[in-house]
Picture (cartoon, helix red, strand yellow):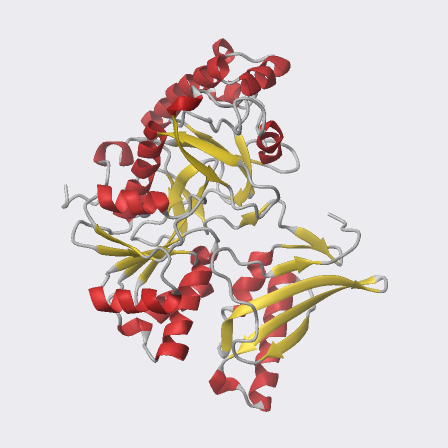
Length: 447
Ligand SMILES: [Zn+2]
């Protein structure tokens, strides 16, 4: 087993037509399950005039209505309390409560059974194995174990595949770094923001060079940073480790991962999930590579509160090439490139916040933090960008050069002009979990 590069050699190398057959068979099964057990879904499907026997081909799947997060929020608090009537199992079978982080509004509750939790762990086992985690690894988890799903499943999966796990729980950042040093941990997991912040703390406050520690691989999640080339490079340089991206969500599951080939994208775990990409304007399902759309996803095996054609709002596109690792599961190019509801219009131009991050992190002499504020000045719209300069680049001439390069690159990549403010070291806010670097203060937003 430890010799195989695949966690599940059969499913991960299944020929494409068999993958599609498996997905179709599983979709019919989870659709029937949901139709039979969830009052919420039954009504949605009855209103749309679609029932399990109508699903005869992939084209029929596209007629199944999608579910949005706001719909799940609306049923919350109904019977059975507190989850509402999408719950497909008796309440006594629920063994764990989680909730979404609430970055896009009121959190949504998520019930899982013991079996669902075992499924979460299995999803993460694919991820970690594909990223080179093996039983000899000592995995440090610098995560405040709480009501968010975050790295809980990463913890259990690391145990499942045979690694040794160190739960970094309530330790503060300095104590975590010392523990990594003391125990010679080889791997860790965190948000890109936090992992960069840890490196900064080690360097600036503890006089420890994180690249000299023993961490050789890092799994990132929660933000798209590890798929943004300039951010990935900063992370890898800081820790002298391979950095891999992963995307998942509380209401979906852990659906994708980068493999050790680092192919410039992430595999969708197609044995466990059905991912469809929908053209935001026409509603058409995009099969060909190179066209962006929003992800509609089905978790094919999740039972307590199913995820069937969930409108995730994640913006993705299929990659053209298969991956050199031999997995037959398709790749999405560049990972999750944004969220359909994050992309906003400023001065009449469509702007994805991740494009700003890519530029800021690619300019030498700048720190990792930045802040973007969009507001109105009179009738005009203004974008302010605050960046931090590194210690060694603090003199005035240097700052002017950095500002000029930043401004050029931003205009090239985003077609917009910014009011740039260069701030001193460590003056911008730091974030423990998900960063909030983009602030839209406009009164009337034209989207
Ligand atoms: Zn691969």
